Image (cartoon, rainbow, N blue to C red; front, side, top):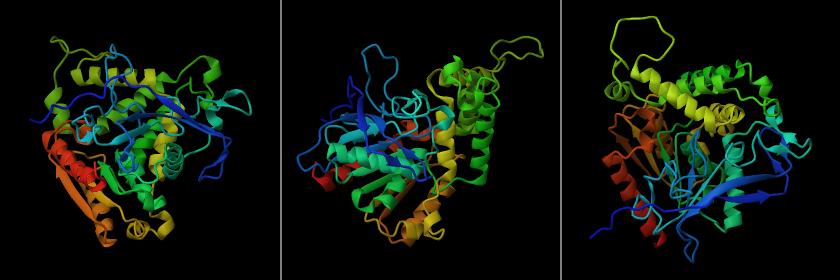
Length: 381
């Protein structure tokens, strides 16, 4: 009888410190940096069973498990990673990390600048997806991983997974890019700009140097998250969950307070996000999204960019995802086919919109199980 999926249990975050100067693609040089990460499962003797999880915009290194038994919430992809789950920690050694420029322990704008002894703030340089991949490769070297069994990510994480196959084509066996795109549309860039403008316009932003002033640009960050969250949900899913339900029945009134359930939900999500995320990191992450275009240095040809990789691919999209629509995933699939790569594609029926990659829709989970079983068999675990 198949054992029911379990949690990875209690986990501990680790910190990898890199003292050598790190050249960023934009031209700046960091004097050194650190990355926070977590691992789950055991590395096999051949070191062939390692999987890298790349996080999306608001993610971090805490992918699965809990830090204490009292933690209310597990890691952000706990449904996917663990014993008996699609990314099975009985078979794979799984690595999750917080990207450079993040706000959960990795070097970022809130970290101390060694040249000044104060937080980097507005002086922290721009980072792009390829910078993240380069820093992730250094962590892989530190862990003794020459080649990933798979690199997996949803949304912005899927962009990182795709970039791995361009920057380090020989270091990836399988690439799983989920609810992602080969580059942003103009509409997506516009959404990101409105979100950034909300932060920049907050009087507490102080040009990005708010740390030593004892304030946080909460209002701007809250608005940015509320806008983003609307785009992560589908109209069908939002309508099914909230509809036009009022919090309390009564006469009509002009009020700035929340009256509809959806208003209350969005403000709650905005407040919760502003409690745990850094505004400068939000600006950096969304700019990295905007800049992503792996075909740029290959004459605009994505097939040419992917030409060198021997990796096999799984591309997944969701029917109601309008932020990263199925059409965008099919662009990636076409480029892979044009480059004569091995690619599987699935378009999953879901009401959850862009957030579907974080959900547990049965067809999605079955697909991930089946594909990762194939990966496990290929590497002999």
